[in-house]
Length: 477
Image 1 (cartoon, helix red, strand yellow):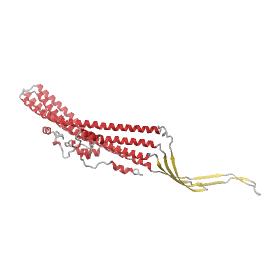
Image 2 (image 1 turned 180 degrees about the horizontal axis):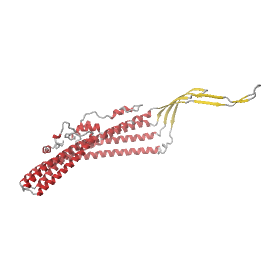
Image 3 (image 1 turned 120 degrees about the vertical axis):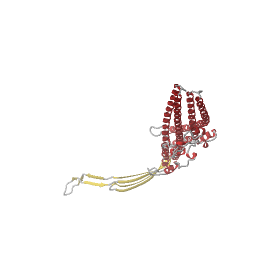
Image 4 (image 1 turned 45 degrees about the horizontal axis):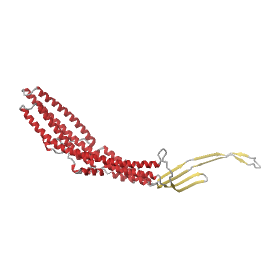
């Protein structure tokens, strides 16, 4: 069955034994869906986007009034002894008197104040636009995270298939070496070979068993990686195919698409927008500031007994014209802050160039890896076919005494090495196709034709954008 798998040369790693597939076989599509739904790294990035969404209503609060209310009540008791001179009368001579005056009052008040910004140098409008740019950048960062998670899941899937095939290949090799050792011992017993031939066969068998242990360790590691990236334990994996049909046909076309539409480029572009708006926000502090203040108050027994009740209402307009603004205490002055913000814009534009160069380099690299993997498959297929013919020939020659046992063992090892190279090349072929799709910026479930409900970040954005009150988030917490 191994030999048939090698000759087929299918990109789905035909060396992986179909007989091991159970009724609950996993597919690449299922693995990608599980990763999309369960990967904690991706869920964490979605939470980051939801946090960033809240910056928009926070910026919109600059359009809303500030309303405060206060109430107070007290209990006041006063007791006073006064000295009063009583004037003389015909019957009573003048003398002092000490009357006691006591009173209790309950002064109370209610007041409400409303402050409404009328003009603040367009700072609120620019803060809203900046928050929306940051939210858009967070969505692009989420796309980057989605691509990373999907690529990691596809790579882990193919790693597990490769290492399972290599483990089976090494186990088959041990079986062949055991049979070779048995035959060598039989020939030694009849005097056809020497003790050296037996020792060589025993040594190669020990080496094969050590390779099995190494392959088992690598297989266990790949299963752990699969669990980490996909989010579920691996079952029996079905072969997977490359996704070349989804990638551009020419390298120059792939570069143009990546430089224009890759999500990491989108993050950098929205970063420029946010930096430009920060310049405008800082410049807005140099504009006149206007606001309205309204207040009403109701007081009781504040000046008993002369004033039992008092109601007051007023409206005030304030206009502040900055002459020189040194900024908050301990901070640089506004003019320096404006210059700093402008330098940040220049930095963000350089970051955009860096991002475009990075995605272009990644496209060129993965394109070359994919081409190399295609050629490697053809070369290793020819290598396997030649190694099989050579092994059969060496065995026949060894039977008639023209080849030694070492020649047979070396030929067997060459075949194992060739099959290992073919399995690795088939793995690299599929992984390189997914890597190229990711490098272009199109590795997502819709592009792959996987139709499941997708996470829509705009739902949460619309839920919180115009919310005025409430501390519960949309999921009810």
